[in-house]
Length: 123
Image 1 (cartoon, rainbow, N blue to C red):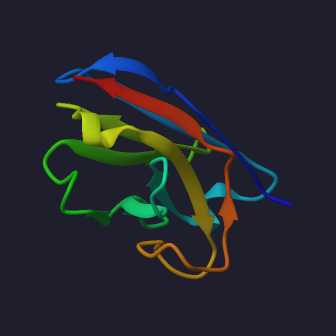
Image 2: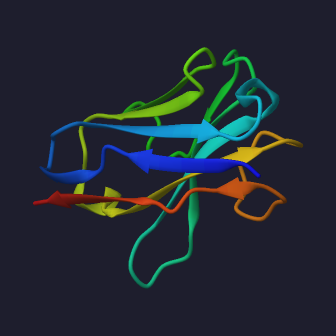
């Protein structure tokens, strides 16, 4: 079984920054493409960013492009999401995902999920 644990969420003012982390255990981290998703209250879960197995390809939702940066450190079995210039609409629970089949750029898929970390951006 693969376990994913998110951390780094918190409360920040608009324009501020946060760095989220997703620590993975239970399997070889480098076998999985990884991704970040988020879900705001009353809304569907949506794609935020994804990265391939060796970190050479990255993908971003249009809403975060230019502000967020995804990365991974396979030696530490950890994925990161650097979030800059945060906006109130970024407020959501952020989830990390590990996918053994595809780079996870869509919500539906056969993959592992973390429990989420809350990000709140005040105006």
